[in-house]
Amino acid sequence: IGMDLRCQCTKLESRRMAIKSVELFPPSAHCKDIEIIATLKGTGDKFCLNPATPWVKIFIKKMLAKKP
Amino acid sequence: IGMDLRCQCTKLESRRMAIKSVELFPPSAHCKDIEIIATLKGTGDKFCLNPATPWVKIFIKKMLAKKP
Image (cartoon, rainbow over all chains, first blue to last red; front, side, top):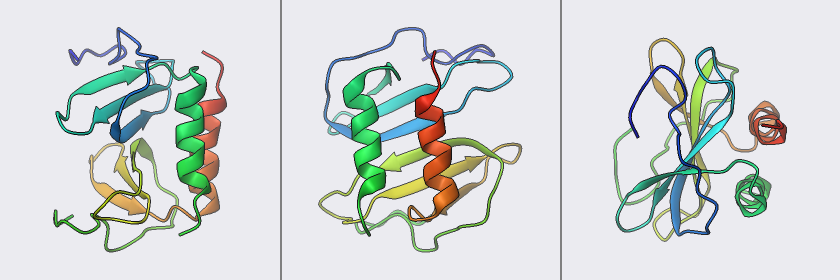
């Protein structure tokens, strides 16, 4: 992902994938959209996820719902 | 944050802070709890946030709710 002062994400992925972590970037001065960057299990590759994709929202909300 | 094969977070922060991004780690083989690591605006310092803290959940859910 080329780091430019606009958004980090150019291509948004919607396919399901084995996620090690997701990083959420709130809208900011140089990028008006939320950006969600997933790190994959195994390879550690990074993908930009489409924030509107249902499974992405469910995945994150489920994580938050878990009782410690 | 010392990287050990258990959890990454040892101290959980609940105070509000100016967040550049949050990284969510789902429960895994070596850490049974979700972990939320925030990167601060400005310094780029990293803090572990308490996943049970209301403002943390609201912050993340609000981000997801935004229409692109």
